[in-house]
Length: 207
Image 1: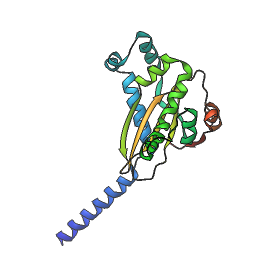
Image 2: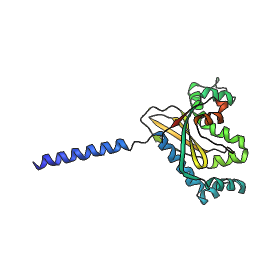
Image 3: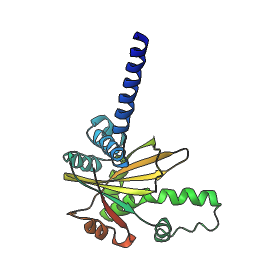
Image 4: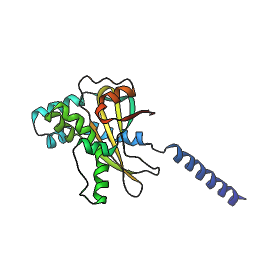
């Protein structure tokens, strides 16, 4: 009798663990927030900034970014841009490359959008964004399409996180602070306007 009770108890605990695990499943938006947290740690680390900052001007820009409050997330938007269009805009010709390299180049284009946007704000902001960019690689069972999530905060610079599908159900996520003066985002239409030259498909994401 005791052995049956023991087996039932084990089965019950196993079921509870399985249900709990299902409830804790991370979504892309959650993995992206972990990248945001890495960026926040970097900009608030004097040691990190001292090691990587190339000038006092860049240090000041990083300090200004660090003054933002990344705990108050306002909205998240999913952005999909045709990779062939990005290659054409970047004036990149892949015709003479092996097909395997063409695939790699196309997959990297999602991560280049943030740099293209920051380049509008000048070399100093572009260099700053590069220094405080962060990333991670994680396993993800679901099929992932290469895309970008734009994280909007109430009182902090927006952050773009690109998601690029890899081999063996892995995804690489790379986050970059976006330097756009007076950027106000109240809807997906505002994001599309920011990315008007990219013909982006933008949707709001639940978080």
